[in-house]
Structures are given as structure tokens and as C-alpha cells.
Image (cartoon, rainbow, N blue to C red; front, side, top):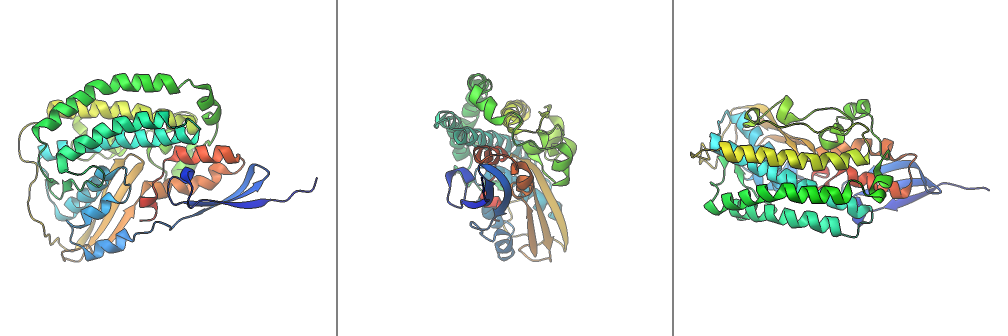
Length: 365
């Protein structure tokens, strides 16, 4: 039978592209022959806008990058500023940042896991379970800064304000209840035959390929590489905290799913240790709003939920960055999408894309 390949546009307006992301896919029947990723539909020009705002005002731009992980966006940027300006952060301020960042990691992983299962056809139940727990985290963010999504909580030299008294009760309740919820969530999903059939040995990424593509985060760790900036190049007060780095063995969609659940458990442990160690004291070393750093450059990075998020800043001595460059994990992790998808089928393509966990806000920065 004579056949010919057909090229299909998937997105940019499609629920399973996880944002305004377009894929031009060439099929032979249902088998993928070629893939072209097309970006740019959500371009905000954040890096260029940063040149026209003061160092403090730029924090609001970082919220809109990975908009389901605003706290870690704040953290990476203010760390870059503090490296540039040689500013020390009080210990209480660092603990509050770590608590906020780990809560954000939990919220982000729930969103990633929920939408992966939605892509598998789970009809919203696991997604809503994850969103229910995420709502508890957003309630705590609202206590910290008055905002739920675009937080702008962290500041150069610390955080916006100390946590109110009711925050600590909510946090303790969350920490006590989350392990039981995770056990239930895990037991419902890990052995599900549909999930196993659709994720095991599908979307396989080799460790060498991941390293060559500069892939980071759960996608890299699923290949067996124990690389986590909180361990290998620690920041804030992470050297005082004991936690493990969950890794996979196959680098497939299933491993990426399992690792995110394991990382939620580790984040609970990290927050619990911060809760026990934090002491009274100042939360911010400076209340200045305008900064005039010396001429030079600096890089600040964190282990964000999706991988290494970094800000490279260049100063000319003025009140705004001369240049700002963002190293976004969603963009870097997408560089190997073609290799992951060729040879698979359309239905597997949707699941593999969901397992990478991208956010177009930081892809199109």
C-alpha cells in the first residue's frame, strides 16, 4: 500500500501542550517521524524589561516566569542580586525562604503529577486531589504576603515580612497531615495498570544524553544522576538540613512520576527541620528599595521544582540591571524533546510531554 507522511500541528492552543506551545509533528500512520518545537507565543520580554526597572521592581517580573513556582523564581533572582551586592541575609530570613521554596516545590509537583495523570485520561480526580493540597499551600502563601500565585515575597536581603502567628499553626497541620495523604495518593496510583502500561519504558532518556543537553531537575535525576544544587552547590542554610536525592533507573515517564512524589516527601522533611531550627530574629538585613551595585556581574541559582533556575545579572553601577539573562529549566529540558518522541506514537507523545513538566512562562521569557 502506498502511504505518505503527514505533518500535523498540535497546539499552540491545546490543553495537553501545557500552555501556548506548538509542535509540528510528522507522522507515518501513528508513528512519529519528526518533531519541530515552536516557541514564542507567550513571549513577555522579561529579560529586556528588567533593564528598565530597579533591582527591587524586577522581583515582580520573576513571579510571571514559572507561574506555578513563583517563590523559587523570587529566590533565584534575589540570590543573584545578593551575590552582586555582597549582601548577607539574616538566618531567620533564610529559613523563611527555604520553607517557602519547599512549599512551592510541593505545590508545583502536585500540579505536574496531576496534569500528567490528566493527560493519561484520569478524568481529573488525581488532579483535583493535588489541587486540594496545593490550595492549603496557597493559603499559607497568602498569610505570608497577601498573594497566592504571584507572590513577590522575597526581597534583596531577606523577605518582605515575618510570618504571622497563624502561619505556624497552618504549617504544622500541613506537615502532620501530608504524609498520610501521600501514602493514599501513592497507593491509588503507583500500581495502576493503565499508568504502568502508558509510562514504563516510554519516553526513555539516557543519562549521557541528559547531561549533554544540560537537562536538570527530576528529568535528569530520573536517569540515575544524583544532581541537586541544594546538595552539590548549596545555598541559603541547606547545609544544615538532612535530606536524600531521589533518583530513578530507567529515565522513563514512570521514573519521572515516581521521583516527584519522592521529592514531595523530602520537601516535607526539609520544612519540618526548618520549623524546628528557626529562631527569632530579623528577617531582612536592609530596607533599601534602591540599590547601586558596583560595576560587575553575578549569577544566582536554585534547585527549582523543574531544575536549575539561574539569573545572570550585569551591573553598570545604575539602579537597574544593565543586562539580565535567565537560565530557565523548562526551556533547557525541552531541548531533547525531539529525541524523546521520534519512534513513539501520538498518544505516548502527550504523556511524555506531560512528564517533562514545562511552563511556557519561563520558556518564552
